[in-house]
Length: 292
Image (cartoon, rainbow, N blue to C red; front, side, top):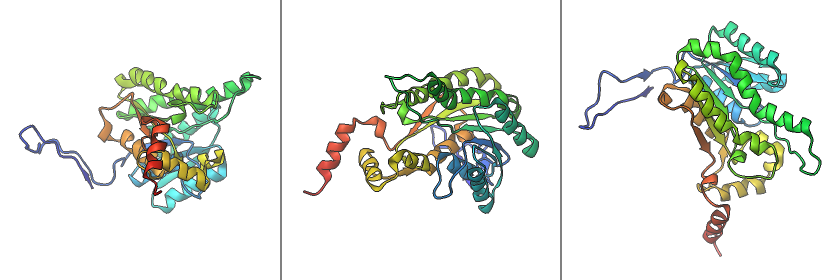
């Protein structure tokens, strides 16, 4: 059971304002997790968020691009005692986004939380610029957030405590050389802030989780799943440990629930401190600590 105690300057507990969450931090709420499918081998950011939210009492709708991966996350949640359904759809389609929101409300009767876990990781050549690819990058990483919000807003307003959580990337904080993707992800932060300003009057909070250097299926598909790459990531972060999808999920859980009721327009970086230190400095520190 989670219990908050408020203590005044003289050390006295305020007995008349101690909210409790006896059954879970999101009990009674419904979350639409966009990009929540998984291969089942180990959780990515979206599937970890879906499973953790379900474990804390939320009804879950998993929206994914493939039936198999979407069904895998739903099966995991149900097997763990949670309540979930799946919707297969393409977030670049307005009709699919509208259908996901409609399905959520028809099945659960409400919608309180939307998590936009989307990523189109493509590269635009500077020598042979492809406008179609550039548009796909910005549609899939940025435009989809606004598109999904436009359909969800009436229900989030009705909720009374709506929360939108956008998933960014450290590629939007530091350069990776992947032209287009990093720029689009960098724009998620300003977009989050502007959405927060626009929607605050409606009781809707908008925040961003910025994962980086995590061991996820997405990173593995990009070539970062091997032992050498994983060891290097551990050496580069200041904690010297490996992050995974659960670390991003715990951050999202905090931003989804009442613990963060006075937080909006913020970006929370979950990267083991990688973006807080010069890479060369961390490499030198790591090598200096190695036995000679």
